[in-house]
Length: 378
Image 1 (cartoon, helix red, strand yellow):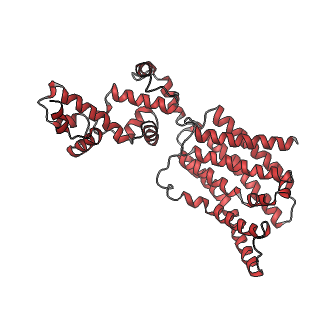
Image 2 (spheres, helix red, strand yellow):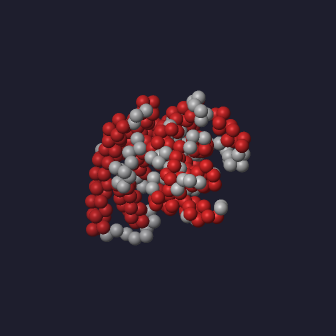
Image 3 (cartoon, rainbow, N blue to C red):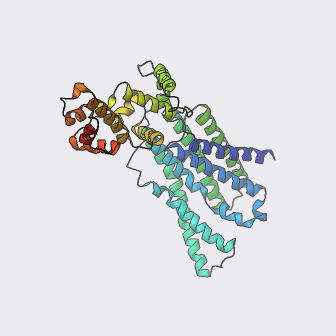
């Protein structure tokens, strides 16, 4: 009773933690979503173990379809992708990540086909069909003894690319916990298959280890905020004494209460700082301005800059910056001090790099060419 209660608590916690990671703007990121999927997979595996203990499969035999799927194939895949995205290794693995799920897909299809015979009784295999299934089962076994150990070991080599020492330490710890669990499961499963060994007690112990991983991830990830996106930058942002600081943020909130009436999340804090950089420091006038330069000023990644701008404004980064440049052009056109300036000169002074980009961006924002706009205000 106590044992199953512990498992049920871990299952519930794993599902809730996964949802928090996926839904919260503080934790949701390309890397963390794979950790959430890992937690979901662990929870499903624990749930099937509880079903087995409580004899649920006897009452509901069709649930064997879920139990017979080797969810364990997903664990090294999600862990690997979590680490790859944590080090922000763009492009190299982006198009190949589907390869990590081939063993799971193969195993799932094979087991479902097998269960359609043994569980659902949809059809009955002939002797030749049974032979083919047996051969395909050997392929599945081969994938298990190669794929499951390989990805965690390879992940250790990839971790060296993590620059933050504290982040590297906790990711290595997580990888070690999950890897040991996977290796122990694999050895136990092989012992049961090849040596006809009763693995029930060992699997029960491994289930308890899985609950520990879920509890530990919740403690480290939520309580210690290790999963927070750009946590070091958040700390720097909240404690810095630069001109674009808390006092300025207060002015923005007081002057534009409707603009920032939503709850203040990490994304909104960074966006407010970006607004201040544009409004107060006019960073958009730098014709070489790009996501990387803005990211450096904010203390976050370039990808995160794009994500914040797109989420809050619905526009991409280039259009967001060009809107400020267009507004600057409109102000200069209206200002008599610049009446002797050509429109192209005004555009270049505002940060545009060429006549083409200037005219295209101006028309996209205003619906008019610079010349048409100038004529309308005369």
